[in-house]
Image 1: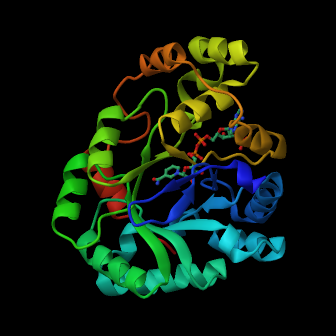
Image 2: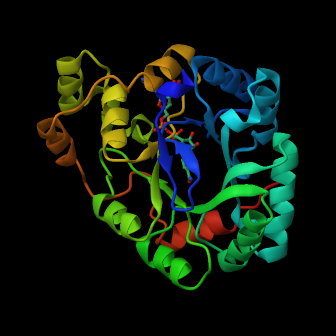
Image 3: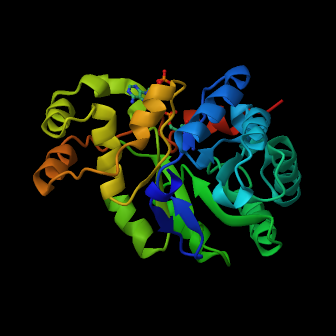
Length: 285
Ligand SMILES: NC(=O)c1ccc[n+]([C@@H]2O[C@H](COP(=O)([O-])OP(=O)(O)OC[C@H]3O[C@@H](n4cnc5c(N)ncnc54)[C@H](OP(=O)(O)O)[C@@H]3O)[C@@H](O)[C@H]2O)c1
């Protein structure tokens, strides 16, 4: 199964499966089962975060699976209240302990707030020490990403940002590509907002291929070279979301989906002072 999931090669040479499993909003008590089901379905890439409160459950599922560590790609994220050089180091060690791992594949700065330059220095060091294979960011807008790249040694390997048919980020993807940063989508289905799963255009394209809307969306992102991490707690949907490597959307279909872009977030604008204040002051524990 794993052999069927293509990998992208990050700028630093690390290989990352283009499709993984996201666990945001899965309650800790359901997460072990969900990740167990996802690994059984064939996922080998799991995306969690300290802020999701379910790293321990992800770790238990990984340990119980018996899958060799080198076959897995595990991402977690540093929360804002742990920003800064020393605090980030401590937070990383706690995440690793909760996950029951001795190294991480990808560590991301979750939000572009607080002392993320200090965090980045800590992450550069973790990478040098071999405790994490690749480091990156999430929710960074172009200005902050370019500034971080231009004033540090290591370029973020990945920027995980909201990306779906209603907010496509094509121009930003082009800039990231120039700068050696891999785009990773969060919320590939926009969490079902804007009636995504019954959207007429996506449904029509799905019907032409005998595929679901979810499969069309994932295929569209993958054909654009975007890493995807769909979330589901249902094993049949986990399998459906994985089954996107044996059909191809035509240029015309890609163009029809491109026309759905509104250019705006359906969730939050990381440049809105109210969002900066709300997310930036949210503390874990
Ligand atoms: N870095 C960040 O700030 C950030 C923010 C948000 C998310 N993320 C990451 O991105 C991952 C994915 O995003 P997300 O969880 O927000 O949302 P999403 O993957 O866009 O959507 C998940 C929703 O779609 C449903 N669903 C999944 N597969 C389906 C299918 N085949 N047919 C119909 N419905 C389906 C799920 O329901 P069921 O579970 O009931 O199937 C759930 O309600 C997260 O889990 C997380 O790892 C990161």
